Amino acid sequence: LLVHRLLKEGTELALPFPILEGANRLFLPLTQLVLGPPGSLPGLEGRKGGQAYLCQKGACRLPADSLEGLLEEVRQAYGRKAPGGGSPLY
Image 1 (cartoon, rainbow, N blue to C red):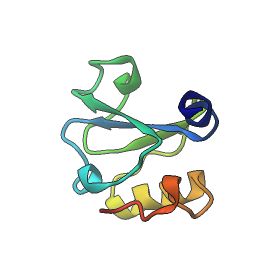
Image 2 (cartoon, rainbow, N blue to C red):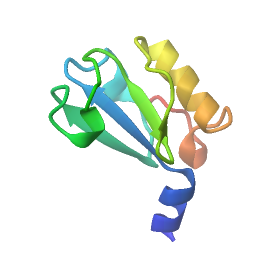
Image 3 (cartoon, rainbow, N blue to C red):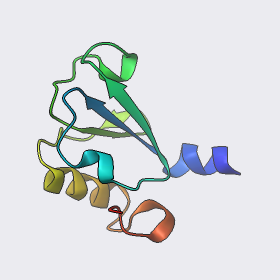
Image 4 (tube, one colour):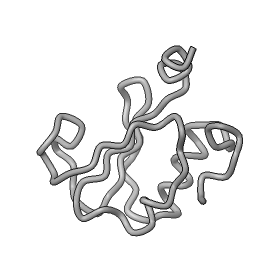
């Protein structure tokens, strides 16, 4: 059931070092985090440090260079509602 929900609604959040300020405070239960130096992992290939890349079903949204920009991408990806029904911030 969880795997089905992750495939249907889940996202991947690539955060190359240095991590975008505040991104580590997000509560995104259906999101796989990819952290590390740019280019060190497949999800970080071609990514710039200090930006956040939210991807869903193999397609990535525009990179966010601010927490507000990332929150807007999360809202758009989940239809204005955070995954799990709660607030995306702790």
